[in-house]
Length: 237
Image 1 (cartoon, one colour):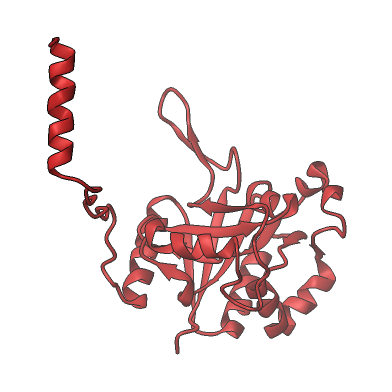
Image 2 (cartoon, rainbow, N blue to C red):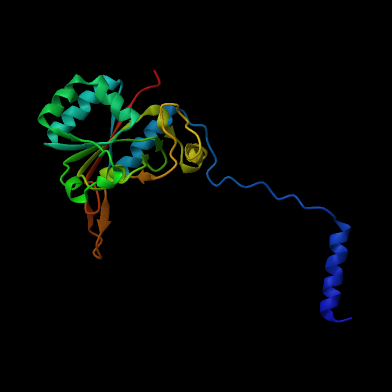
């Protein structure tokens, strides 16, 4: 018997001694959930996004959020504002007569009727964008923003100032904690008011755009917004 046959014979004998499939060990949790409270996650989110030059504005109500957004738009001298059609953004606009009045002096740009009619050059003229998050990742200070069309994606990239509307109920500890919900959004709506996200993508936005040259000089706003401000609305009370 050759060495090869001897080895194969021993393998067969060992397999016959232990018939049936063996059980796989449980999948280890790389990022185990620590069951943090909403307020704990809000604090971690603020600390994380501040480290990457982002900003959080805590708002106790929708009315206060609308007031803060209006004030920041005036400070930014924004005249042309891109608006994403998201439930949180629409709710903000409905709650604020001030923003409605502001819209008379400023041009509020929404998605075209035909998605393919988006013009990059026209969107590059936007002074600010108003987008809605679906989840917030506390550990990295990231905003998970759904973008089913080119217009939504460009809102996060082209305007020099990006305002993100979010609520405390969107806070999650980290990406693994929210992944089952993101997967579910591809097949069935989590919220009946939200459409099923069957196409497009989810953008994970972490602070303003940043880059550095060979001399390690950090520059903000080269590949995207120079400012990113998250208006975090308390919907837990």
